[in-house]
Image (cartoon, rainbow, N blue to C red; front, side, top):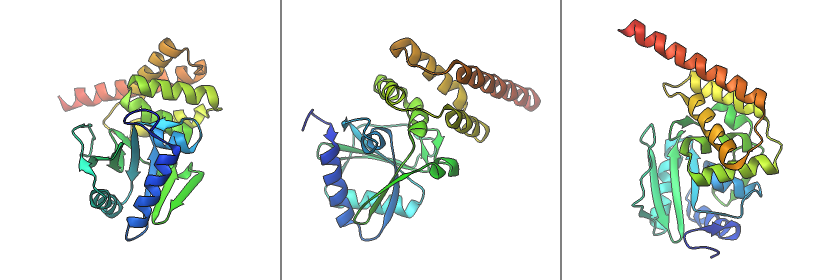
Length: 225
């Protein structure tokens, strides 16, 4: 183990093979966060294995399989909008499992359409979300480690900022949560802390979406009163 409570690429692969062999049927999940970054060769280790499920049956079967392998409910807690989430410790690995939503961010059809990598570990099918969507997911948690990770993505890859903007707008339109506002603040902090090269025109457009959503919310509030 390279560092306590972290797993590397080989350890993650071994875990997935073990889980896949134990699963009684095919289960599909979507890798986000550090897990996805490891598959994309952006990161070498991660503290937690972040997986999102679209089907409740897959979520429950996967969780039950982890428990069968000896996983225990973690003392660590995380907020999830839909309250369908679990955190389980299995050895040195912490599994963060979500159904459809990761905190306030939904796994949409557009996110799924951008997936280019799929890996199979026996009965465990892992679909890797795009770097653009990793940025969006990480803006929700907004820990210092998330800012480090997004800074690395921006430095190492040619980010499609149009996709980031489109998904941010979609998430904002289809939620009571002001996603674009928090993404904007996250990227402002990223620039201050890491001098991240986020295009100015992108930030200008994101700011306009943010202002529009806040104005619309204010109008709705006036009408309701």
